[in-house]
Length: 394
Image (cartoon, rainbow, N blue to C red; front, side, top):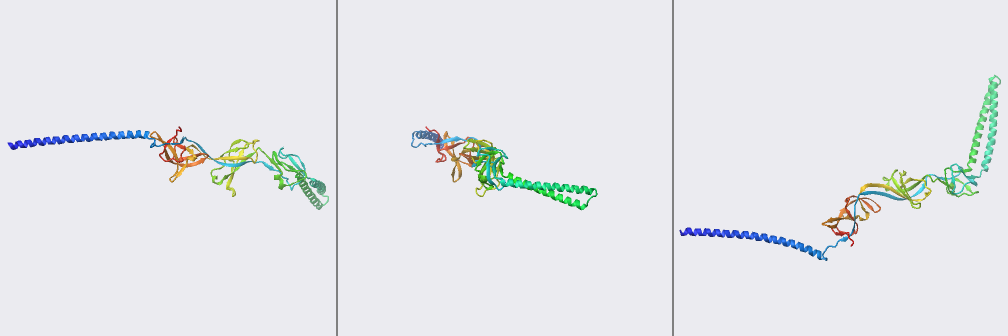
């Protein structure tokens, strides 16, 4: 009986002990959870306090760098080849005598006069030519008289022979003499024509319509073909062109039909035209090829005038461009700096790009940028990736 009571007592004690242990474990878990919650709350408070400290502690606050930015917008990009050319005329007459020249006897025009094709400009000494013509005329007259006589004699002999009078030999002889006389007359006429041509050569005429640009001739001087280009020049202003030499590396990009903008500074003229002729060979001295473009007739445009020639060799619509000075290099290649908004702040970021053509201050960007990107156009030189930026000048 006593043993059973002891067993019951031990059993009740064990149950109380187990219950006590269970309640203690539950209390510890609750305490641990409370402590963790308190720690998270303290962490949040620490973050809030640190943010407040950062705002108040200007010594530790990151200072943004002042920059200028521009938003990229697609646009038409055009590349030009800038050259210096000159105005020329397709119709310039370097008036020269048609023979060996001679002494000037008379001048019928002066510098600045407008002349027409075939107009008499100068008269050279023709005394010798006149004598030659006179002698040739006399020789031709004699040859004609003899040819007429021989023709008449032949006709008479032929008529008699037709009536069975005379001999066949007389007819043949008369015919031979007639043909010889006619041949002599023909030769005399040719000599006369040559003499007249030589006389005509003493008349110096204009080969084109135009204005007398140069008149460096005096009565009594010798005027010959070798000095004509520096003595008498006629210029037609209705057929003008501009010419220039294009570097050989543009050989495949410039051809007939290519657009050209011509600026004549002295005449204050801007003219849109096209390449009319492009050379196919490279000049050994200049390492370039020639081009020419037609110009309109204009009194203010003169031959040998300086012309600024802009050849449009490349154009693309909806191109992405950036200021050419914003392009930079590092060990990884070419890049530009852009401004990116992150957490309500502007940060500098590197953008690797593939550049294309450039003209003036604009650079074509083939890849790496898109419409809407903010390119840093001023203050980009010393930026690093991630640097805080501002555009506020206050």
